Image (cartoon, rainbow, N blue to C red; front, side, top):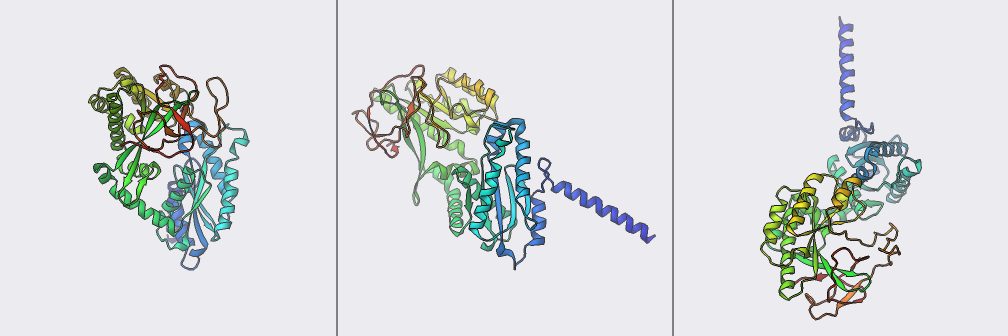
Length: 437
């Protein structure tokens, strides 16, 4: 009787272990998930050995991966998991803790040694195209949180390491180590996050213009509307600081429409001065552009002004056109019918055939010098683009919209359809941004 009961208990425990393993297992890579990492963290780490461990987070640009690799993306993730397993020791714990990231609890306290190990792993991860499977690079970076800093909550440590990894990825760096200075930066971000809605209500976000110039005549022909946060304590903050905060708080749409309203006011002032050949592009997030009421809200704002509508260009980054394509397409057509122009930024980096469908609805693309490391682009005549890009210093035309220095100029290579010259001329030099007053 007792033997039979023991056998039943043994089978029950075995089934429970199997169920737990299945719940903890990532179906794509076969690695454990966050619960797996949590369980082994409690078993391995104690007050005596805590200072010897670091939590390393490897993040991948999964949005780009899905766009470029398509159905191959799962194979890439499995390859990354295999590499991380190969470079993990018996004292390490590896898990896939999010859609875009892997975490390793690694027995290594020396920052330089950890950096060398990360460099080796990243080099191997980026060697995936050499396997002959796909013709693209893997964008990856790593962030680390040393447990000696005193963290106890594993989820919080994973978050901090992930933040460092994402920061490195956005900065095109390989590695970023969490430190006390980082903690101060996080505290500042939390403070800014709590005040961002108040900043929108208080009109602390201001419009700046970055100018376009004809690559042949070097005359200024238009500009791009940019937002900057004039914080009462921190001063002028760039988009890299406040855009993530707006996204986290779900307030990106408010800044988008605020920028549109300011752009319309600027174009109206230009039209009132009889300057009617200067265009202005205004950027929108994918979430705003794909909103069902986007057309209604745009036409309501633009309808309050009398400047020529074709001078206002609504710009969307092509590289984010992965979702909501049907709604974006419908909004593009409606706004073109209303008289506005549409442009795709990062032209040519969009989602293949789907992006090509949207390009048909744009008046013309903005062609810009490529980012560092991506090679030099071509002009309309097939010539290499100059490097570094041309820049402007001061406007020589008496009808300049403001005084001060101009921003780095963005160039058109070849005249697009409907291209109109303006009476602005400029000198060549480096410069700073151009506020609208």
